[in-house]
Amino acid sequence: MDVSRDRAWETLTKYTQSEALRRHALAVEASVGGYAGRLGEDEELWRATALLHDFDYEIHPTLDKHPQDGAPILREEGYPEEVVEAVLSHAEHLAMPRDTPLKKTLFACDELSGFVHACGLVRPDGIATLEPRSVKKKLKQPSFAAGVHRDEVYTGAELLQLELEEHISNVIESMRPIAAQLGLQAPGEGA
Image 1 (cartoon, rainbow, N blue to C red):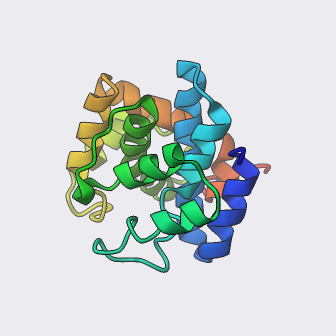
Image 2 (cartoon, rainbow, N blue to C red; image 1 turned 120 degrees about the vertical axis):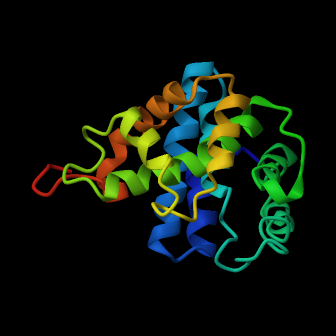
């Protein structure tokens, strides 16, 4: 089966009704896709994998099930093992090796995309003028977006062999073009 972004979106929306989870998938897709472009990788494959990383979270919302119980579903749907393994490897509790650029990038973008999204939600202009230094400052506030695992944000930058500020900048830059879809646009801005 050819892996396409459209097919991944179909799979995601079949299993995920939550608008918040869909937006998270879009944010991670944008970030991972941005890195695919920078690294000369298969952007369609990387975007599809990012869309699918939490596709089963609504039906398997606990660590004893997500994402491992979603893997057989992806296989049944015809996704190649490269996609399935990348989805599995994003989960810290499974302790799978992140031994490919795709696995490293998906892990690196997951928590940070969610955190950048949260930062944009509390700003009057959304993500339009969000700067890495503001994100770094918020990372030091444990009560802000408390569900985000800070250690995974830092580990992700290390996996990509980037300074945290550069990684944050890349994620922000990748998410800005879809600000409207993410609900991160200032009131009155065009779509």
